[in-house]
Figure (spheres, rainbow, N blue to C red):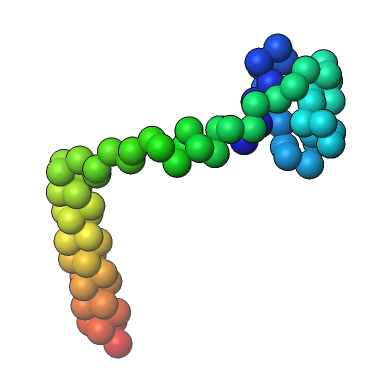
Length: 75
C-alpha cells in the first residue's frame, strides 16, 4: 500500500498519478512496500490460542448435542 510521508496517509494505487506522486501534496510516493511486507515473517500461532479454540470446539459440540437431544425429547 503506498504511503505518503508528508500527508501521513495511505493511498490507493488508482489515486496515484502516472509519476507516482501524491494527489494531495504532489510528493513522490514510495512503492517498495511490497518488498518490505514480503520479507517480514509471520509469528506462529500461540499455543494457548490453539487450546482456546479446541476447548471452544468441544463446548460448542456438547451444546449442539444437547440441542439435538432436546429436539428429540420434544417430539
